[in-house]
Length: 388
Image 1 (cartoon, rainbow, N blue to C red):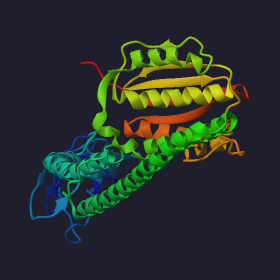
Image 2: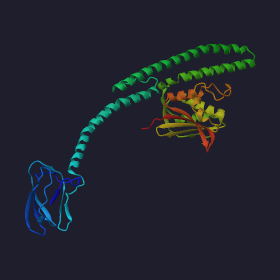
Image 3: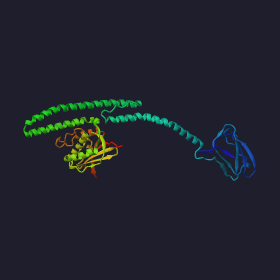
Image 4: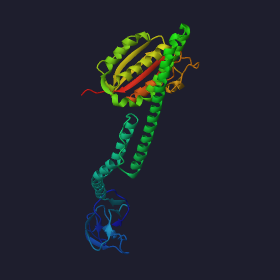
């Protein structure tokens, strides 16, 4: 018999055998019967010499391996030449997963189970301050008196919180200064305007009417500017209200401003907002629709956690690049600056400021039929109060 160590590589097999290559065997084939024994030569680890020729046969069974020394043999194949010139090969059994692979997988699993609680705790510890930072930062853009961001967590998060708090203080001071300036200007202008109204009473009718129109225009401009600068203070006056009832009332009252198609209003929609501000937003949008279109329609529907008001008209629409530009203060589509055709340029700016102060969004969208613009849609989306 010829023993070939490392002849083939197996994924599984019996445990390694410690031996000095002393092999006992018995010959069961044709030829002389009996037991034989041979010892390998050539140093430790070398292959043993082949058995005598008379031991060759179709069947040869290894009886035992004597364990001597500390030489470790991995699973191997044994082959010997038969009388007809062919070879018989003995190979170890092959399992799906070798024992060493089972031990390795078990070690990985136990290690993962031990590390998982620690990894979860570390991830929560790292993510918690970031989540709190994000929530606090989101309130700054909505609430006028939002609390400062807590400087907790890793050093980078604390530094970002300090920078954000400093920025919030600067922005608040700038807004307060602007509001105070506009309030002072409006207050100082009210007295001269009141005196002008009294003085024009003795003027001839044509001239008096023209001056009265100019005074009314200046008064409206001042009120619009005051509304634009004071919109951020609405956070303190938000109350739960029935939006469905409010929109239904506005749809009836605004028929004189624009020809109204039947409104589509979903009932029992509750929000937290300011009634006066919402009336002004919807009125401004309907007035714009009446100025550029022949008719419009008001729709109110619930969209998940939001309530959506849509004012849809059949006007010419807007160029796509001006759907956002029209919300800028004092921007007017009509270039003649005539107050009879273009207004003050603050209507949509005030409407968006009042909407954002209530946590809402206001946007304009063209309506298409195929490739043609068939109208404009003003969309006001407000957070809805969910019923428990």
